[in-house]
Length: 396
Image (tube, rainbow, N blue to C red; front, side, top):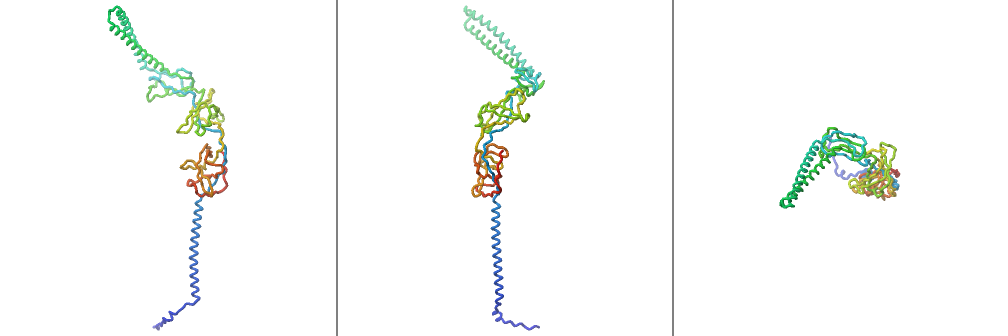
C-alpha cells in the first residue's frame, strides 16, 4: 500500500499564481472582448449595408423622354362607308304568288319599269264582289230616284202627304251614300290591283332579288322581306363619323379626299354637303355626308373608304410615345421626374392617336421629363433613378 498523502491546507489557501500567468489571462479576456465587439460591429455594419442596398434596389430605374412641342398634323384620316344616293327596298303591297319576274341583280332599270307580277286570286274575287255590290247600290239608287221624283210630283197636287215625300227623298239620299261607299271600295281594290305589278320607283340598278316564281308572298308577315332592292348609283353619298374634338374645324362645302381598296393609288375628291349637327352621345362623333358623281361607275355602294380632311394645324401640341401613357383613376396620365428626382403623376388630355405616338393637347409642357414605360405602382412623391440619356420622340 502507498503511503497516505499529507495535504497542507494552509499552504493551498496562501497560493498565488505567478504574475506572468495573470497577464496572459487578462490578455485572453481582452482578445475575447475585442472579438465579440468586432462581431457585433460587423453585424451592425452588415445590417446597415443590407438596408442601404434594399433601399437603393427599391428605387426604380427610369428613362426620360426628350419631348418636342409640335403643331398637330393638318390631315385627319377617318374610315367611311359609301352608299347609293337612292337605295329603296321594294316590298309587296298585296299577298299572293309571284307569277313572273323580269329583272335580276345587276339589271339597269328605268323609273316605272315592271320588275315582277304577282298572281292575286283572292284580291281578284274581292274586286269582282265589290263591283257587284256597286251595281246593286246603283240600281237601288235609280229606283229611289224615280220614286222620290214621283212623290214630289204628287206632293205639288196635294195627292200625298209631305211626310211621305220626305221619306222617299231620305231613302234616295241613303241610297246615294251606299253608291258612294261602294264606289270607294271598288277604287280601293282597283288601287290594290295595281300593286300586282312591282315597278321600279326610280332609275337605277337592281342590287338584290329575294324571290322567285311561285313563291308565296304574305304582306305584313314574318316572311315579309323586300322582293327587290333598287339603287341609284349615278351619285353616291359618303358617310364619315368625325370625333367631337375636330367638329369645330369642319366647315360646310370643304373638300375631302378619299381612297378605296379596289383602286389602290387613286384618290377621289368629294365636297362636304351635309352634317347631322348633333354629336352622338354614345360614340362622341358627328356624322358628315359627302357627295360624289359616279356616272362612270367606278365606285360601288357599300364600299369601305378612307377619308382625309385637310384641317388647320393646331399649335402647341406635345407629341409623346404611347408607352408614356398610364391609366389612373382620374383617366389618362403621364409620369414626370420632378425636383429631387421625385415622380409626379400628371393627368393629360390625348388628341390624335398615331399608334406608336399620341398627341397631348393639355397637361404637359416641353420641359417636362416624361418617364417612358412608368411602373404601374409608381405614385407621386416616389423616388426614381434616371438612367441613360433622354430619348428623343419621333413624329407619328
